[in-house]
Image 1 (spheres, protein in one colour):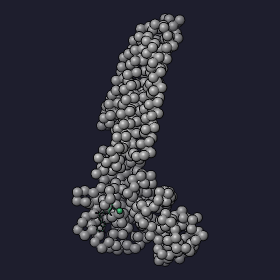
Image 2: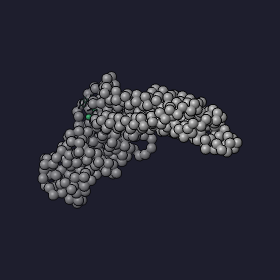
Image 3: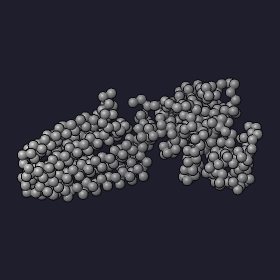
Length: 227
Length: 263
Ligand SMILES: Nc1ncnc2c1ncn2[C@@H]1O[C@H](COP(=O)(O)OP(=O)(O)O)[C@@H](O)[C@H]1O
Ligand SMILES: [Mg+2]
């Protein structure tokens, strides 16, 4: 085959994204588990782990830049590199939310968390993790349709966030002394909601990779309805 | 998605329609339909032997100079076919000039190299002014203004190629054809020619054949990708604006070629 080394380099870049992505998937679940089960040691570990994800993003970027400099990628190869850089950035930011939830857990400390405020969080985390998993599958398969379907999952996460938000408001009204705790938990749920938005961004880059066209929101919807 | 083979808006400088070119009984290119956008740079790319030079030469009847060559179909320029019997090929070649792969200055002074074409066309104006203007447009004036009476051969390869461009410009063409104009030049001289072409497109339509894909990507506005079939006849696979063709080609063959996985 022509350009074997080059093909290997691109393949390696893709594998690095998948590896980083599956670590993020795992930590999303752990973050909520640590928060709800009050496992402070695990929360601490997740906060510490964030440095690794920051470094991964830099390493993936450096790798991509050196392929650009040495191999002059074109067409779908170039799009793979562009998408990889963007996706690595989104993964790093999703892990910032993991770290954020870890910090919230540490701030809450030994205090018990009221059940109605956290009851939707495991499901939010699992739905977001599943979205991310499908987004990475779509990335590997260059599957625009799957990426598009995955984006639709974001609505369910938004709904769960809204439920949590209302629960927080109700709780605050009844328990004025636990205002700060309730606010912190609302913030954790918000982090999960943002993480799912980031997965949506990943899906948009997967669609760009597969089709050569970058679209968002209504534009994106239109282009899939017309098919 | 169906690959583009033409551009949709804007003015057309010259157009090939259902063109076939034969050398004797060998059909070198087939069914060429290609519109060249006015005052833009169009690059012709494709594997060696696919007929890029043949297509380029057909745009100004250079093929007439090859005894065995025969062109079928039409090349439309200002509404008429340049292969019509009443058309004067010499006039066509003045209006559609050509720059070759190897710089080919005449064994004359720098000044005469530029003045020559205008002189034989009966130019009556201020020759000094025309020479200076042409050399300036070719981005060579500052380097040669103090040695206009030296031989064209005294210049470096890159300068010689710019001299040939000045010579082409001096007869006021509309279209400039370039066949791998930098393949004999070093990288710096190559980049200077590419910069020069960007300037020239403000006034001229440029068609450039290049085997260097990076050059097509950096230096052109539109790109036409040619390939050849089992019968070795070259054909147009895809035509698009250069950004689109190099980031999102619609044809699988174009994709393979520009990512270097062809063959
Ligand atoms: N003067 C000629 N006589 C016969 N065959 C020619 C002549 N010029 C080119 N050919 C043939 O026509 C085909 C296209 O050649 P050319 O236009 O030079 O391709 P390219 O510029 O893409 O390398 C090739 O098979 C080549 O051998
Ligand atoms: Mg050639």
